[in-house]
Image 1 (cartoon, helix red, strand yellow):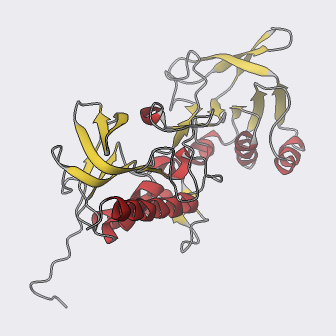
Image 2 (cartoon, one colour):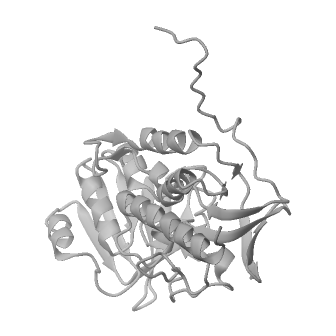
Image 3 (cartoon, helix red, strand yellow):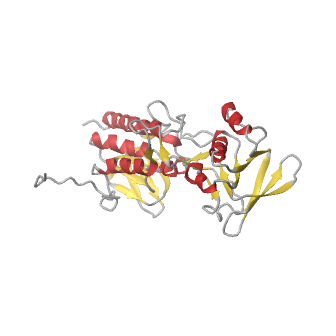
Length: 329
């Protein structure tokens, strides 16, 4: 049955309003992952004058295939979950600046300025910084050239492509061993290459992988370069004890050497850990009044979607309290 005069219009990306460069927003949310989108929803429900600034939507969630640990969904495609988050955000009339990288955030007096790569900037009384993390790179020849051609950072996305093939997994922690275990289920032959001396993975992962005869362990080795003609063919490794180099043929290389927080735009503004994480308290407050941070870019442990979403909501509510106290009606 149709109801004349009632139109439900959820804006698409193209319909979203652009933020005004000349306005001073009460809240600027920087990022497009679960924490940023959750903050946007909570901020909008509090009727805060806010804008969302992000390069894209989804964050690292987009690199996963299926989510099975998000409350309310026993199993859901990652892209579908991101689309639901995005749709929820866009059900509010939130100005969104999309597709441009952030260069730096500065504060003068009580106003924060977000400087963009295209030369524009945005002003706000408070900031919620929720830019997430990115995969650490080897920075060796062949890595960038062969990305997507056998070089991958996402086992969940790409492991099925290497069923029954020979694969190098670089790393010695839980991520590397989880990737190895997933590849074993696909009958792959695996060479684990660990830069440090001694495997850092939890004992449960070590036992699962070490009992397989299809895994070769190269401890205290480094990858010097990746070779291939439009496709990964081999990696040149070096034994860090004796300097001996070894060429290992392979169909693919999974790089599981950790994550880096996307905190460069605020490295000269707020206090960071040695690893570059933004230091926050239980209210998502940073070392700078009015600057809040949430999600994987922060010191909050356990980098999970549901935790990031909760931290984003908390950051928005904390920023709201800050605004009420600092700018009373």
